[in-house]
Image 1 (cartoon, one colour):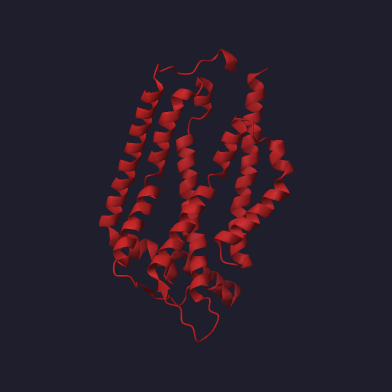
Image 2: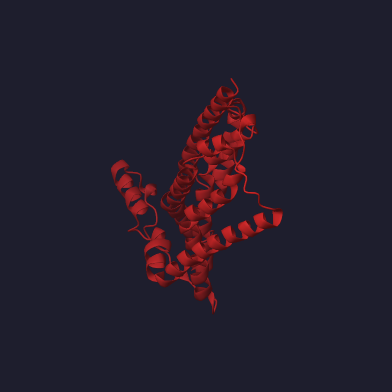
Length: 274
């Protein structure tokens, strides 16, 4: 059966009814994020001491691994965050505002799978049955890639960034006392950006489905993409080669995976018209 012979799921809903349906999807999504945020707000000791502030301490997993690598290779510069800096607060409501902000960010990260699930439920009736079949597992893969990106940002980029930015100085007369809000915004922005960047294969899949990109296009502009990846890596990491390489490698791997995904989509589309 060709795509032209297929029909979408008709629900007979009017434009206003679709808006009402969208409103309920958004409300459920907001409730889910707020529920996770409340949990994060309650367990603030774990969120801050075990998660948020941990990357600046020598005992953090990544810092210990780099220390072991340094001992093995004899390269002393590989040791990071050996001298944890002090995080200070200079605003009256600074800690309370940070508590709320971090709780909302944790709620967004933890609730991401459910957010995508609600999005999928909203767009699913507008898809052909064959498109629904090909999109099965999208919730799992999207959530998995997002979680993988968050973990990569937290365990790799964050400790490297914290080490470089926290220990960098222009003069021995200037002492670093990192503001709480500055530290939190750095960590959360890195983690969220990494989670979004790791959705690249999903983005390529949907762009391939609607015909905006093809495997030939992606191969043709591979060199251009490498330049963009290097620029992106320079933006989200400290300005040192080692950190940029660590970020570039998984991004280039994701791009190559995207080419294979696009090729697979193209083959299925060609087979459907034969």
